[in-house]
Length: 454
Image (cartoon, rainbow, N blue to C red):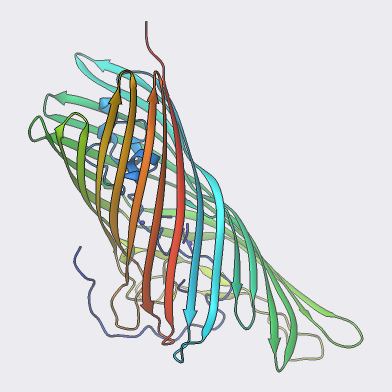
C-alpha cells in the first residue's frame, strides 16, 4: 500500500512527459496518520505491469508481443497465439533499499526490505469457435506483493514483517478474429490483502519503550481487462490494453500495544479496533505498445502505460492512538477516524496525505535475440524503463526512477525456462528537504511446460 520511501499506506505493487509542476506543498500530516503504515508502493505502482521473466527481461515492453502463457497479465489478446496446452509458474525475489540524507549531508535514515513470493500461475488450453482460434486460461497473479521483511534505521528504529499481497484470479480468453486482429479479455477477482507486524523503538525525552502494531487488511473486488493486437504488417504489431478501475470492499483490523519503561516495572497500554466498511478505489490503467520483428530471431518492443493513481482513494480509514495510562489524561476510547470530506472524497491512496497525488507513467523498451543451435533455443534479452511515481518531491513534480533489465532463457523440447534481473534507481528531495536515494534489485524465474496434443 508492493510495494515498494514516502510515508503512506501501500496498495500495494505495481510499476512520458514530466508531471504537472504544481508547487503546492501537501497540507500537514493529520495527527498519527501515516506513521502506523510502514508500507508503500514506490517503484511498484504500475497496475498494468504483468508477470513473467521473458517479458520483464525485455523491460516489460510486452503489450504488442504477448505470446506466451503470461499474456493475460499483460494483454489478454496475446492468449490467441497459444496453440498448445500450457502450464506456467513465475517466482520473484526482491530487495529494496532507500537512503535518506539530511540537508547537511549526514545519513538520516536507511530503509531495507527483502522478500520473495509466488508471482504467477496459469493453466491454458487452446480453443476454437467456428473457425476462430485462440485459447482460454485460468490464472493467479500477485499484482502487488507485501511479503517481505523491513528494517528502518533512524532515531526511533522500526522492524516489520509483512505477508500476503493484492492477488487476482482471472478467467480469460484470447481469439484471432482475422489475420490482422486479435482480441482478448479477462474477468478478475481481487482478494487477499496483507498482514503486518511491526515494532518501533521509542526513545524521546518523555518516553522510552516500544510500540507494537499488528494490521490485517483484507480486500475483495472485481474488474476486467480488455486488449487487442493489430498486425500492421507481417513484422509490426500494435498492442492496446485497458484495465478498469474498481471500488473494493475492505476490512481493516488493528491492534496496538505500547510499553513504557518505568521503574520498577514496565507499564503497558493496549488499543484495538476493526472496521468492515472501508472502501478502496484502485485506479484503472491504459497502455499502448509497438513491436517490430525484422527476423524470426529478433524482436524489438516499445510500450507506454499510465495508471490513474490521481483517482486512488481510501474511505473510512482509521489509525489507533496510544491509550493513556490511568494516572494521565482521560484515555481516548476510539480510533482516529478519517471520514470523507464534504465532496465525498476520501484520503488519497496510497500517499494518504497528498491531495495532488499523481498518475504513474512508464516508458518501456526491450530487445530479444534468440540464438538457435539445432533444436536448442537460447533467448537473450535487455530492456529499459522510466517510471514516474505517484507521490511528489519538493519541486511539486513526481520523481522518475530509471531501470535496466536483462534476461535469458532456454527452450528444450516442451519446457521453457527463463530468468530476468531488474535494477531500478531514483533520487528526489522530499518535503523535509532530505535527499532520498532509492534502489531496488529484483530477480524473476519462469517455467512453462507445453503439452503436445495427439
